[in-house]
Length: 118
Image 1: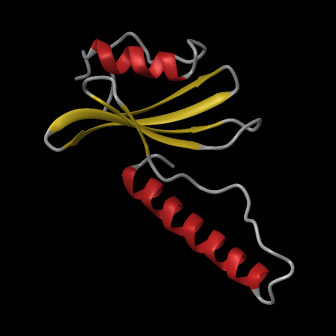
Image 2: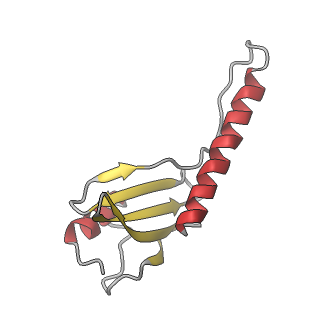
Image 3: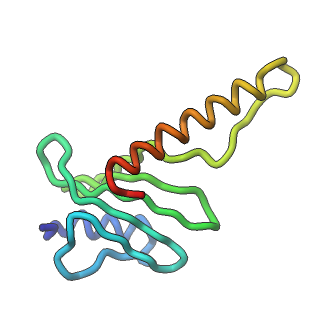
C-alpha cells in the first residue's frame, strides 16, 4: 500500500538512518525494532491523503508520536509526557501540575490505543 518514497525517506531521515521501514509492502499496522527503538506504525489518511503515523519508544529518550505526510512533511503529534514541573513556592501547584500530567498522559495513551499504536 505504501509506495511513497517521500514517506520512507522522511522516516529514515527522522531516525538518522538507524531505523528504516521494511522494503517489502507494508501492512496497515506494523512494528519495527532497530537500534534500541521500538516503532509501531499505522498507514492512514489525513485530509484524504496517505500518511504514516508512528509511535516510537526508546528507553534512553522521550517517546515520540509523529505523522509523516505523503510529501514527507513531519507533523509532531501529542505524546506522553515524561515529567511535570511545578513551582514549590506556589501552594497547590504540585498537585495541579501532577493532575495535568496524568490527565494528559491518560488522554494520549487512550488515543494511541485507539489508533492501534499501543
